[in-house]
Length: 378
Image (tube, rainbow, N blue to C red; front, side, top):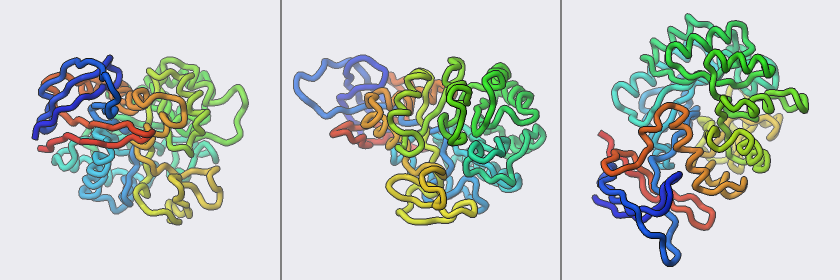
């Protein structure tokens, strides 16, 4: 079916006339601005979420993960306008980690899923300190183990492309350098490193602060802390969770402006309870509350979050409605910027002959609506 669309494109000037056949952009040409109000449509390559821990009850770090569950996650993400993603395996029993990496490898290499960019490992080698550790299970937190990583990468078939860790752990700088040499991007997360240690991590190859502002203690020095240090370093990208709980809208506006829109990425940090009805659930031996679009540990209230449940399209909407950014800026932070960071910018450049996926969003009454998803699998 051929679709003809009058639209705008994030980070491109003016309006366009686009013709789409299945998932191929067969025509794209500049068009005059409308002479009267029209529906505001945005044609994109789809959103790119580099941090998805699971959803629909399917835990990418759980002991019962299956290929069919990974497929269900991808299909639901695509329905939400997310056409590229990084399945994220977090701190867990190393045996389960290796098992799940094998499952993800099978899903990717058997072409059961087609939108995965790479696998992201977050945790494992993070700070054991309360606050900085977040809700990661302390019993599985440890120093970097290069041989363990090699086993994991073998299990993953070489698909691990991003590893988030704490740079103050013993051997962390050497580990970051090892990953850099092997083409794996490294990020800093759940850590309590000083400014100079962070600079050393960057010198060895780290280039991202994962979900910055979160994953740290609630009481920190007003000047010497990991937030200011990582915001100040222009050679470090940063990802942010825009769900209204992890970062207040005014803080979100300030940190993105400080880091710069060209170095900021929106992520969802989706927990496997995303898509479930409100209520209380058990997660990592803790009772968590899912309510009003948030997820937190019951005994701690919103002071201790347990991942997020809002998908990346909802994060874009929140950024535009509450934090003072335009919907175009939000779409750039959730699609073009993660692609740039991951070295996949060429896959997001729209031109005649471009083969999808493609997602058409409607922005109306401060609501971001997925109008059309064009992705002809197979």
